Length: 290
Picture 1 (tube, helix red, strand yellow):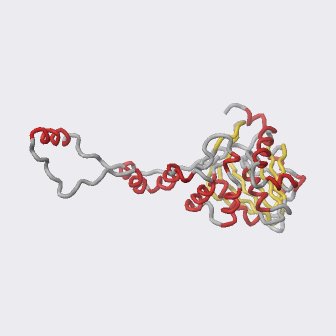
Picture 2 (cartoon, helix red, strand yellow; picture 1 turned 180 degrees about the horizontal axis):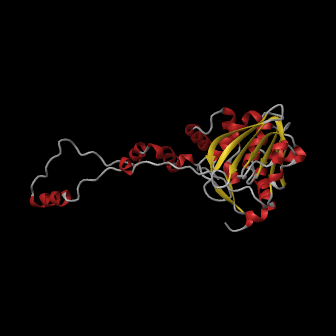
């Protein structure tokens, strides 16, 4: 789960109404027949919601998105993410438009930019985080490549990976709670990625994400959907030379790290953003009450 915050001074977002003391005087003038003091020009209309949003620039984009009824559809969500800057390429836009997020959100509102619960103390990440990870990994999700999604949850991002690498590639999702794996398979069967699940190029497995999934290694792309205190060595071992991993690292303070394995096997790491994800942990720990 990733959290973001914006701030703005309240004084910039509100307009003061006329003095309450002026209202009784105007009312009495009307009763006594005296004309009210005229305005030099017609009084300005009260600020509308749209006007206030435009003044509150840090809030405007998200508030506009959340309140417009037309943005309750998948393509509109992707269009919003383009305006927001999370979706930057046609390749990512196309796959996010093809895989309908609503099929992977069991309850709630699927088309808002927010994480949603999927049960068992797990979530589906916010759309802007999906877009961010797809953009970071897109060059490593070419047709025929192998991709691993650790903590695959609802199956949404795994389905996107499989669509990008195609039937000649391999998309693998691993999750340590069997019920979540079963739910992900059901979700994908309703989606555009269903044929890939049927032919075996897309698969989900019950496994400990910290250990990866050696059966389909090495991987050109690895995505980790939960925060590890440090990068698990098995995942580094299963990353192909020339491949890339995107993983949140940290406990309370976390960074989304981009890990590139060079041709000689050496590792380069850079921080892309500060994030907030659920922890990459054991099955028993995840099932404990938060």
